[in-house]
Length: 250
Image 1 (tube, rainbow, N blue to C red):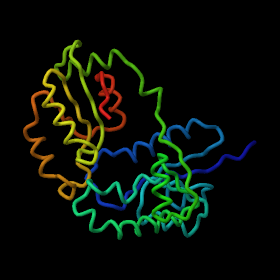
Image 2: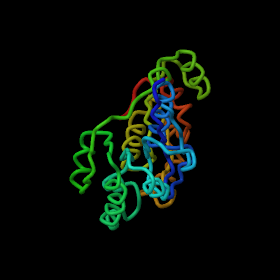
Image 3: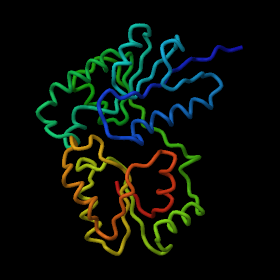
């Protein structure tokens, strides 16, 4: 009988965040975990402890103290780099001032891993440019096509829930509710196209420490009549909003 590869996938953020329902990094982590569960040659764990090991591979999707605990006992550590210094510019207040310190913080983790996974070609280049000496490879985040598919029943249900007619056009975007993600542009477009319905799915990642926090709160308190802000949604519910929509705003 073939020995299974024992993998521990970890998502335990060490940076304070207001994301109670997760973000893109946690979603990618959970989707990878679900995909590996379907394989016969892998025994996969999610946020397992040291006592559940030893593991053949430790795959981190977050940065925190748990990383260094596993580093002491495991060599094959992989990190998916969901964060680079530039991603904090426009995400958190005063990020420009502490960018250099944050870069060194990230390098502590990335240079301790055996492999660093970049989720885009541009991110791979930036990781190497910032001084990552570990091997960097590009692997894009996957999509569960069994879940994210057209479902007309779900579409009808969601439109009834938000009192939207079938002939009305729905435009959707999903991401942190911050300027860096284009929230301000989305609001401007919604105001300029009152004949369409606009949905922004997501929350403010770092609460009042987020860049543009007061502006976002003002929009949330009094959005245009055609702009819907359901807030952050669990990954298991996102496909319902996508089914309701006609256009994805990217």
